[in-house]
Image (cartoon, rainbow, N blue to C red; front, side, top):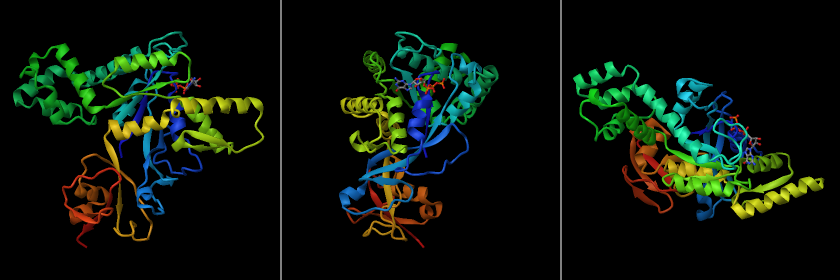
Length: 393
Ligand SMILES: Nc1nc2c(ncn2[C@@H]2O[C@H](COP(=O)(O)OP(=O)(O)OP(=O)(O)O)[C@@H](O)[C@H]2O)c(=O)[nH]1
């Protein structure tokens, strides 16, 4: 499963966002945490369940379906400890970088209200585009640090063996950087690595960061009056990135009000209903303000953030393997039991391998259950496909 890391300087709202994403609510269910690490949590991406289109009742097993929306669990890491020069081991530098290594993609959280300076202290009119640049630079410098460790020796070895890409990718092992990535990134550089300048190595680090750590920008505290301008600025400055305005605070408030049986939160429609009639005026006013905010901004942005991270940035789709293509169920009769998040381009046979190595090894063909047609091993799957895999017994 692809893991998403939340990063950003202190006080931008990372913990608030992490809690808003990962705190359990009764409705969505109690997923056991897969790890005992307190900064790792389970959240959900959501997409329309095929039960709507097929007009059937589903009984999900590995995910939840609420009013036709399927919630598929994903893992989130709160990567705490980013301070300037974290790459040199300042603050919790090494822990920060270790967590970062585990993430397949990350959400860069910035304070769109401009009320925290580069180190996370209270400020006025701070420009959040600076924070994004600072974070990218930290990661570049971290990669640069790894590549250039023992560079003299390493570059000579690469030169002798005429296999620069292999040697650099080995040096960066654990970062999802392949030999091909390095090969493509060094295409325009001198053939002899011993001739590379510091600038060449920095550019290489940047290119490798872009390949190995896709990111999107979360413009948090979007509820603050100064946020609008800063969000515009972020979108203009980082045209190649997805920028999502969020109010983690409002999302967390709603989630806790839901857990406390004060409201019924209708996530799909960005609305809620108050179900507790003992609220005081201040509480009612706060909830009315939030209702207006949701209407005006199409929600708190937190759901968009997760969906964009998985469906756009990581290019994933949700597919539904079944064992009976007529009843859309597994052996026990559970209808549309499992939702699998897979990379766009995943083939029927690759899905078989994801379910079980044995099923992959003995794959014969698959069936598109919605269309009731046979599909071959190399057929690429589409969003919301319901697939039966036929394998040799
Ligand atoms: N207005 C507003 N305030 C927010 C929002 N999210 C977080 N905050 C506030 O910002 C402050 C910092 O939030 P945290 O979640 O602790 O920030 P952090 O990035 O985890 O900070 P560190 O733990 O120091 O790294 C708190 O006072 C939050 O209440 C938001 O969406 N809107």
